Length: 310
Image 1 (cartoon, rainbow, N blue to C red):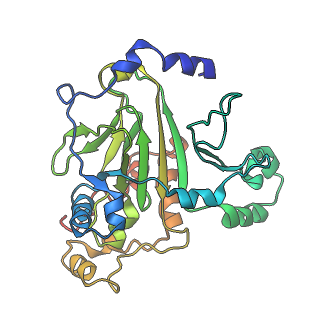
Image 2: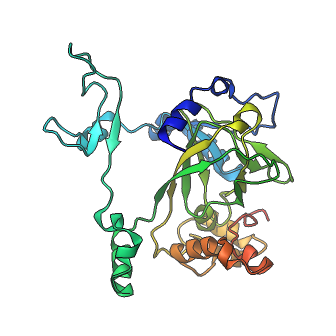
């Protein structure tokens, strides 16, 4: 889609009639967690976060913005620098000096990763491997685009658990669904303005000996009038460093040790691989080119069947 086409799409009449209605679709309720209360050590809010993490592994997060003092450490300044943070009111919008109300941050593309794939291929594989190990972060930001799906049987992103530790999703349209624990029912997660949708990944399940939950979820066509719109979302995935060995932290927590001791199959919490090996296995076996029957599909799985109670 061109920029002009996108601008036209968001000004169409139906854009203003795309809120999810509780009467129209099955919506799964999530706890709303206040990050400011968590930072302040509020015991009640911490208990609510624990409940969210041990039951569904999904919750809404509010008041999660970065403090202005922290953002100002990366302020662009007044000497013409493009990269960095621009605070609201740092620019003017007219000749009379009216200050703007927009804030943004410009981040430079990494020089090494900016080169075309063809150029990088000219390096020996050992050099490429060294570059990747030096500059590639464990965590990642993903911008996802899903076009309208005319066939309601088609899934935009298939059922899965997330690979890493914690995911932060920002989206405006519906489409995200969670599998209600103990059932075969999929329910929508309603986007809330100003809230991130957070969920735990496989690493937290393994580290906690199955106490925490990484729930199955998927992305389907948004319901109702939203189904005719292009869906964009932004998600930040955090995960352990590549070399971290995934294992239950039984030596650091009596609670985790007890959970593993009473698990039906304790070996599930000692997969014997690093975070990178876990990630690579799951991604590789979801690629169409690597699909060689049911075995490859099963090998792409995560911790969807790994909890302390199963």
